Amino acid sequence: MGDFNINLRLKYEQQCPDCGLSDFVEDHASGDLVCRNCGMVVEAHVIDERSEWRTFADKDGGAGADPNRVGGPVNHLLSDGGMSTMIGGAKGVDHALVRNLQRMQARTEVTTDRALIGAFKEIGKICAAMKLLDTVKKQAEEYYKQAYDNAKSIKGKSQAAVLAAIVFLACRHTGNARTFKEICAVVPQASVKEIGRIYKSVVRELGLQATLGDKQLEGSHPHSYMRRFMSQLSMTQKEFMWGEALTLALLPQEGPEANVHTPWHGKSPTSIAGTVVYIIASLPGKTHVPLQDICRTCGVADGTIRQIYREIHPHLKTLIDKAGGFATHADIDRLPLPVESAANK
Image 1 (cartoon, rainbow, N blue to C red):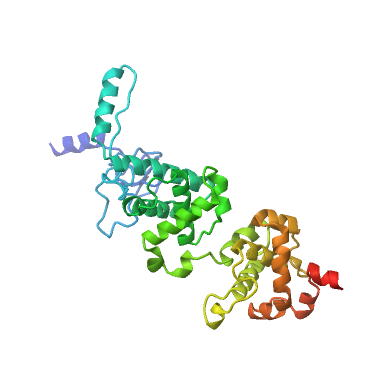
Image 2 (cartoon, one colour):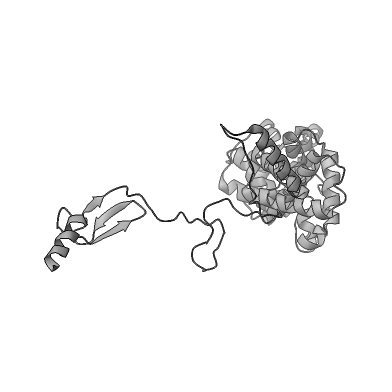
């Protein structure tokens, strides 16, 4: 009886064709069935028949596998978590019945969720057009949800302007500064004035000044734009570090000098950033970039850059020394003279 059981097991049990044993281990990553004894790959591309457990949570907290089987991520901003179903039509289905079911489902849905889902889609389109990070998109959705629930200032306003202001606020908060002009280029239905007005009212009504601090929600600092502008102009990493240091020397954010008024205080951050790029590009031995390319990249008129450069030029040696002394005084003397100085000479 024992020999019969052994023969029956060997008949139906898979054996290694090399060593004849039946001790295998399955490599789920590559889909291979490998013999433990001799290492021979007996089967390749084995189908994984386990349950398709997946998790979309950032952390499972050490609780093991997520008990949710497949499905999309949960959106905590929606009342149902974004896990509701939609009734769709198909071939061979009574379309009149499907329409009636869809109408009944629409009546039972929360109106707030429908409005939020539509707004989130538009926010996603704006962020995709501006090539913003997913963190900006999520932060914009958070702010829109807060504004929708609490801010009275967005009621009755243009939806395009509201969404543009919310995306602008999310860019400021996440450190991905964008200008009103860049936002308007993607949302042409809204004007700069309208976006700015809604932005200020949302910040005020949601109490974001106290929560995030004044510096983060005031006019963004020029150094926020340096990496993007200099990267688009193919300038080096060292030049970016010099440019960032020079902008912080021009407009200190900490210490007693932060409250000292200078002729370039109150200028547009992109205008100051463009002027700093122009200064570094004009130094001997640095990446030369024509002024027209700088103006096109920064979205600033050349007259504006020349005016700020004229105000900064007398203080350049002191400012560059504060920024780490990345240029000698002899190199600074070789910079182009401001238009008025050249005319006087």
